[in-house]
Image (cartoon, rainbow, N blue to C red; front, side, top):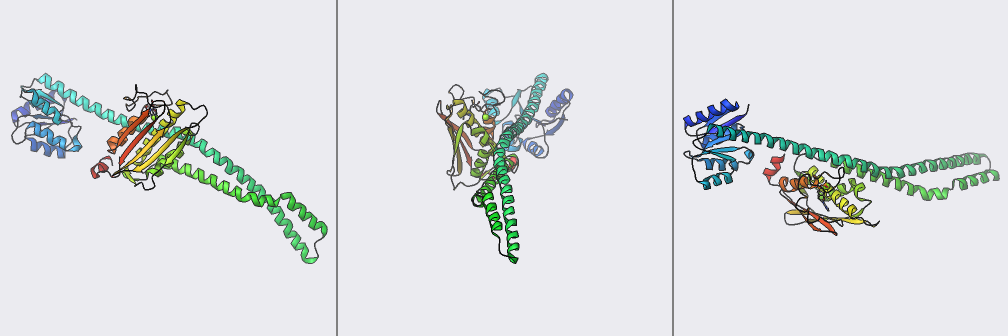
Length: 415
Ligand SMILES: Nc1ncnc2c1ncn2[C@@H]1O[C@H](COP(=O)(O)OP(=O)(O)O)[C@@H](O)[C@H]1O
Ligand SMILES: [Mg+2]
């Protein structure tokens, strides 16, 4: 049952309001006789709505609203104030302090009931919205991984191809050497009893030139090196993908952004390699940044994919565009710049690109969530900044600034 708190110093008034709401909305009612009492209740119980009187001894309605809002953990809790004050300025003060609504006394039962219903409904909607946002973030991530998976399969295919070719070559080279070794072994065996016949020597010579041992001796080390190089490539792609898909979930932890960016460039290679060259200009002395690694990686991925799209849309007549990724440490913050030589953002849409679901791309290529999620992640979750500089027709730079340390409270809150 929905539980609400009624705060009023008059017991009669309290009972009156409680009866009215119980009857109409079937609510569970908790009562408090003043502000201090109310704060005690809120510390112990979770309630869905607070209705409080304005005129109360010790702590008035405005002070109570301020005290409730000062505790960050009940920010979404709706507060409705019953006020007999006619002065509009007091009502403005109340709303500014964080009250959600007020009802003027004497209370009209219909009005109070309707306003309570609105607050409770809003509360339900807000929860649904938060849940939907979380789900949409999750599905955006899954979608990104799905999209990347196809590209990654492709990326892995190339080294696998040449690893295969080299190993086949090594297999036949080994067989040739084995023939040679066996023939020599036999010759040594035969030479124990009697000197090697000229026929036997000629036979060996023929074999040596047939297997072209000089060529093999040259080629085998190359071939091994290439195969190892391919294996290293595959391992790098797989580990970048793994790190991307399963970062140390959900907790603020120190993150090496240079490494993260290299990983993102690797997993998204298939998105940019036909349209742009990626240049990395990474500050060697970049400190680790305390953040949610998975979500920050997702931000970089969104910015990189956007940059690749913008470069592709500009079209280079066969000439590759550029995407430059730079990092540097500033005072207390770290800056990541993703600069592209793409289309730029037209003035007509620049105010909307961070809006959820705003996209200029066709279905399947864009969902319009990348930048809105990026902003929520960087600004709201990390207290950082996400800005851009753009020059239509020449390109765009997105700039992420993240504080190196998170305040302990923020780190706990998201945990
Ligand atoms: N680097 C960029 N260059 C030009 N336009 C961009 C760039 N990044 C984003 N945009 C614009 O912002 C819009 C919103 O981006 P985003 O939120 O990532 O959604 P999506 O990429 O799915 O369209 C894009 O559709 C595009 O018009
Ligand atoms: Mg995008």
